[in-house]
Image (cartoon, rainbow, N blue to C red):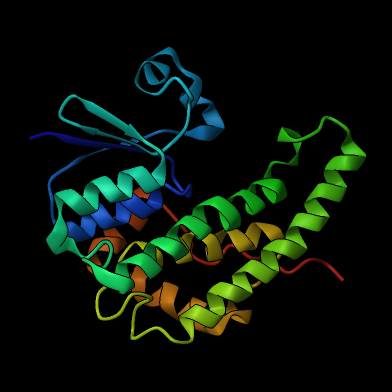
Length: 217
């Protein structure tokens, strides 16, 4: 059995990256540097023609899209606790995971890359400003969930929701959102980051958890 994960430092690929480390399973991590456009190289496009991360290669099977990768890993590693095993707890976790992926994540894309949606500079500024306010509200919804964490978002074991919450909170710094103003989520992210296995992924990606910088008055 051979597992390879293609990830980009600081991207959503941190979610499966950290969970693979937590699982204890042997895998080959491959860093894809987006700022160098490595995702557009012929070698990478041969693996994923869409030029996106993450990509999981399980033996000869290439799996893309973060939710599909997490579900594949959850089925492969049921003991890892990536998602609750069954019942309403699993349904609720999937409900939150897909919301993080299809609502919170794309809202941040409008903050960070408004040029993907228009080439008009004034419109880009308007998109960024509007999306920033929306993103702040979405992080507030995660904060309400983090306040109920026991101690993790799906109960007694860290899993996919905690990894994604850390990622989304960290991105808030790029939107001018101080993560410490969301104390429950910030505490959750710090707990997750402090796990030795997760710390390995953080070190490999060279991540700084709080990237917020106050803007000059």
